[in-house]
Length: 308
Image (tube, rainbow, N blue to C red; front, side, top):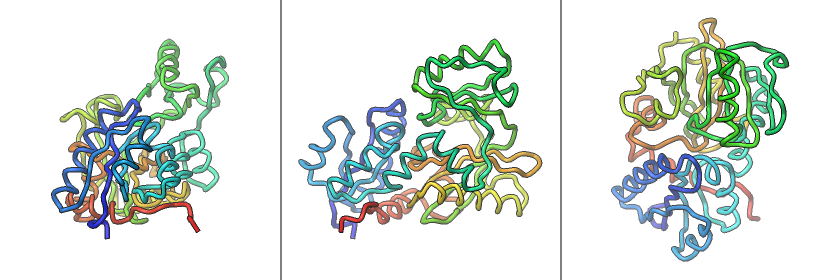
């Protein structure tokens, strides 16, 4: 049915991840056009509602990352305009983007996540007040792609890490540092499709490692024994479901030597660039080349709120 509709690929946007989104959206748009879809690329700005009406968009493939695109804002606009869209709905998108609320949701559902404390700008942060010691991780509450994230190993590094995180948000998280394998689980159509291991050249899988060719090794399937591999996939699915996500997502985990799987976050709009992990998981785990993956995702476009 989607082949007869005019599809708007929403990309670019207003967040710190704009450049990555432009790459994702370009790849998605090219894949749709190559398969005969009537698709147009729309660089999202404050006039998005007017553009969608002028272009007479009938369905939206959301290739946005970060604020105003991944956090429920665009999803809410599309609901009001009655334009079916890809990915999770308003509430699930907002929960997944907000690291504090997503961690609280994971904990309420018995899903393991690193111990943490949340601070707002202006509140004094003292290491002595934390229930865990160094090393620790400092991150903005609402950013993606590891923007504003630091690992603090010495007390003298804390002030710089706080300044960086608060540069991106009014609210930050301080988490206990968990040492483990970086494993990411792909979820498609409400089922896990594989787990990939990331070995970054940098200290952790930061923005540079994610988007610079050669800065991280991708190992599929992740180097876990069969039972632990299945456990990681099921925990990824549980995290996806706990937030009410639908369509597809990528769940980031840390797997310790003892076999514990700590959920870091759920990405409701994972990257679709040439270096992105979700398309790689789909291709290697589910046998879906990029064009077929894009077609599968657009076929699931829907509205979350019952118009009736």
